[in-house]
Image 1 (tube, rainbow, N blue to C red):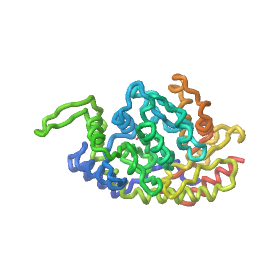
Image 2: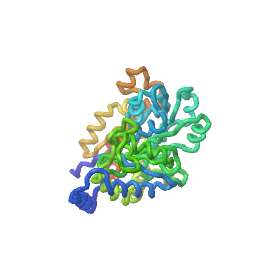
Image 3: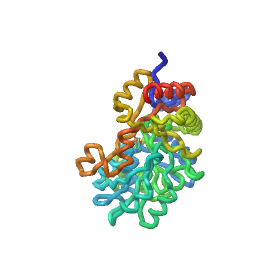
Image 4: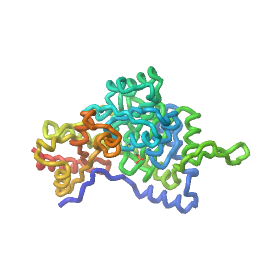
Amino acid sequence: MSEFLPFTRPSIDEESIAAVAAVFRSGQLASGTKVLAFEAALAAYVGGGRSVRALTSATEGLEIALAVAGVGEGDEVIVPAMSFAASANVVARLRTTPVFVDVELATRNLDVALIERALSARTRAIMPVHFSGLAVDMDALQEIAARRRLRIVEDAAHAIGTRHRGRAIGSFGDLAVFSFHPNKNMTTIEGGAIASADPKAIELIERHRFHGIRRNADGEIDVVLPGAKSNLSDIAAQVGIDQLKRLDGFNARRRALAALYFDALAGFDALLLPARGDDGHSWHMFTVLIDFDAQGTTRPAFQKAMAGRGIGIGVHYPSIPGLSYYRDQGYRSEDYPNAHRIGRETVTLPLFPAMLDKDVARVCAALRAELR
Ligand SMILES: *Cc1c(COP(=O)(O)O)cnc(C)c1O
């Protein structure tokens, strides 16, 4: 039988392994020149006059970005009801209330038409998630935010390299947060970054990510807020520098593989395919919906059967209001019908840059064998 095909796998080449070895030998391991170079490269890549600050994760970045946006105890933040739990957890960690809004079935993105009725006098911010690298309709979102004086903190964990009407995600928003977890479109092992055009926000991000420390003109240390410890290492930044050079190539390959899936699965009505988007889609994941009841099976049984055929299947994601912590807070998954359905029916097919065309064919043949 052929080798096991995971649903994702990072592409790290020998050149970047050698470059990391050189950083080890330099003796400069924590945040130094490599972090500065990585941040400069990210800012140039994103464009739009943005500055970028690197962090240990997008989760840290989202929490810091919300704090920088002035979100705090007693406030409400609009969060999509279907995303990775971190999107809501960061809100809850700030003693702020996540107000869930349902997503659209095909795009899996926040249904912008439902936002207005979820707003209250306490709403401070909206957190769109560019699901699987497909941009949220930012024009519509920015119009609501401007009219209602709300901040937008973009969870762009899936969206490094995504473009929206010709502009890179991160280049035109308020605060955008990227993830460089190994499953994402590029990696720093663990890591993330925040992009902003506002020098005051950038300064605050620096304080929050490193102990609240500010140096005065003489280089003396002062602490101006109880900061976290979320700075990236030079080792991780070196990985990111190499990955960023390859990112457009990675994403082009992802788009080509997604196109192969669309061709191979057209008309196969056991699956509901995702929205196709346009050339700005960075295809972080290829997720499809399957009505497991109608198929007479369950998702775990299906995953097991596919694993038996050498194919890894992911689940991204259950509806957030249906998770125990949120259920215990009184949220009901059923109040968000699309998120609820996606949460039960979604599976993630293998998609990563090193995949071969014939791997797509193999996945599709296995799907047709397992489903009717
Ligand atoms: C991965 C992910 C995060 C968290 O990213 P980390 O870098 O692992 O902290 C947040 N939101 C979404 C939508 C994600 O997929």
